[in-house]
Length: 68
Image 1 (cartoon, rainbow, N blue to C red):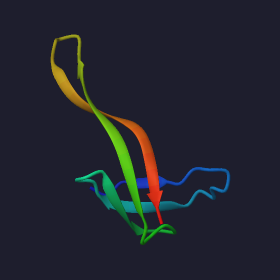
Image 2: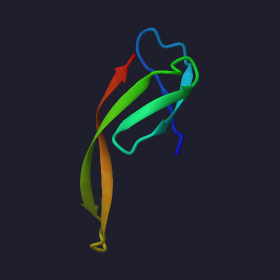
Image 3: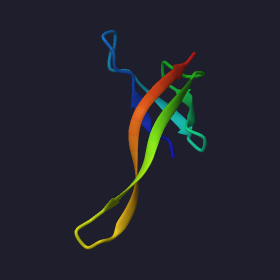
């Protein structure tokens, strides 16, 4: 899995970097202006139940840490 994460702050120029990994919430940025850095995504593992009573695992984004 290689999602793209835009870096959004007041200095953002619209650049996008590609990251891979994720097994331990640590993603290595492999391409783009942030290549060579890492980002840790902190997710909350939760469950949701639909109208039919079926339960699904969901992951809710909590925070991110950029590692130079």
